[in-house]
Amino acid sequence: MNMKKKTFDYKTIKSFEDACEKMNLNPLFLPYVSMIPEGLRTPIIIQYKLFIIFQAINDGWEPNWGDWKEMKYYPWFEIKSSGSGFAFADSDYDSTGAHSCVGSRLCTNSSEKAIYIAKTFEKEYIELFLIQK
Image 1: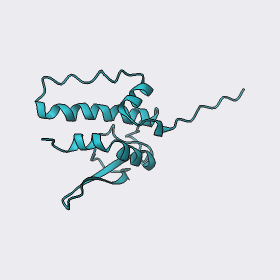
Image 2: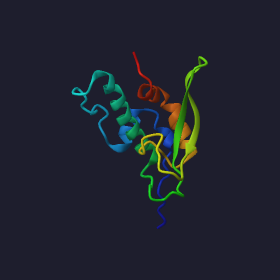
Image 3: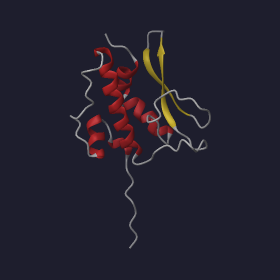
Image 4: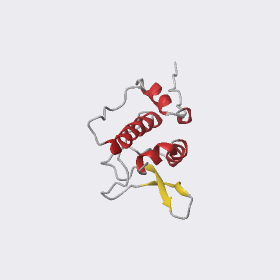
């Protein structure tokens, strides 16, 4: 009997709740942040949510940081001073070097996935990167 693994469509993850469902997590269980200064609470919770979203979309893929030939893609955003504000700029990858422009958990194995995450979860990135007043 030939049993093929069903291909996962990462585009079914359209929300944090979708990601939690795939990962069998309760979306109401968020990091406890009451002891953290108020201005840092939202970014910490958002980063947690993005970690879960990336895990769900990556569907078991984990970056091998010992393999510098393995491409690791992440969304690249720019803050424009021309009035357009925060915007998705590109999908990028880093295969060499010893620096990280994003959290190492916030990468994926394809440019298409990185672009999808950037566009679908732009609101979360705004909450993570920009100070909200």
